[in-house]
Image 1: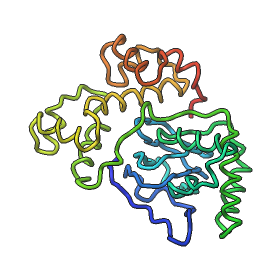
Image 2: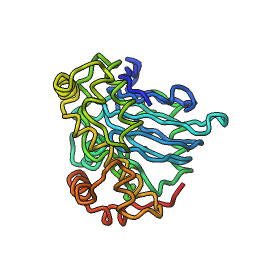
Image 3: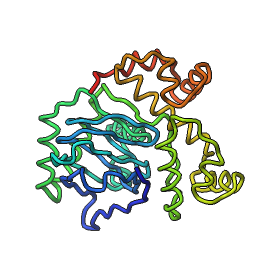
Length: 286
């Protein structure tokens, strides 16, 4: 997967944009943009990356992604034309005064949680597809009422999972995506092995100290914090898939060689032990 910063252009005459997309196009790119995104998988399967979360997706997968959060879908059945319905809406759409009332408190909490990505479980798929498909053919006042219906439904879904182990700070990345691209690509293909700072710095022809400074300045976090989030995000995926792996195996498969260090870092980012996380988020294996 590669990282790009993408500008999603919501037309000036609208507050949102909804499209039915072919997921087999440009699926190797991790991107971010200044809009909320609601993504529903109509058909297809593969691997999705949202913030620090690396997990499987399949038909019916529904996620809400906050502004500037890196995300991407890696499709494993492109020959069958995997599709999604993707709704983008402006950051400011629910910030106006008429929405700053107690009745919309649950909506604002939901949007706040989306900064780390939210996956909605136990969704009424017939109803969600109905809402999204109807929205594709509406405009004006009717379309905004329909978006509110969708958001109201999402606030009522109690079985949800926050995806990224911690909030990402990629919103300051405005340029130099070529370098970040190489760093992302190297880390995502090598995080299960031991990664030295020099190995990553060599990818973009910088010294270790120059790379450390560059990465911190660009992303507002240290490289080792980023690497920890990637490893723990992958560990969370393994723990929640219902695999036969025990905690020690999850530890080693996530790039750690010390179980106590793995346990400590997972608790730092999730406030749970591996067993607690597995018990709370285990889902049937795809």
